[in-house]
Image: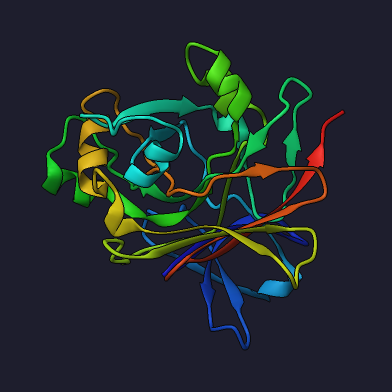
Length: 263
């Protein structure tokens, strides 16, 4: 199933996205996505609503250097254990929301990533089997990074934590085998002539999804709705005001965000 959070004439709701490219609709549910699904009977054409980030998160956990080619392009070794960091919940934005470039940075880059969404039971000190049970579904993430600040600061909080630096969406997909999916990022100013910046496959992760969930859960309790960004393949590059960033993952869909200057 595909679960979305959206704005309609009556307010903000969660819903299930149904149909295909020829005609998508969203059916409202009266519950959180990872609770028992209760349809309200209300339905809208997807084109008539505005999608938001698909879930509330107490925290977003990023994984650094989880693709060997990305580690190599920055001259880094592959870590022996998952390298984790936190992005604040205030960095999260949804589809078509603007990535806002802060004046403190002279170089901001995109990072296309598979995002794991934790389910209703959460996770604390779980093994691989427990990690798989704790996963509700998957969405698309963009770990936007102020690269110059990442290089200058002894830790990554500022570089990764600006408002709007965590686009998520367009929806959460459940029941998806993520062992070998294509991740693609395109950037450009003309929607009909986007430049491919990143192409990778999830099979090339250094640490797979259950390993990551288990590892993080031994550091901090994962709560329902929390997100783990699983790392990015090689090809990250600068984004500038006027660009649009498109991240697509096989089996999930596409996440698009314009880029604007904050000053």
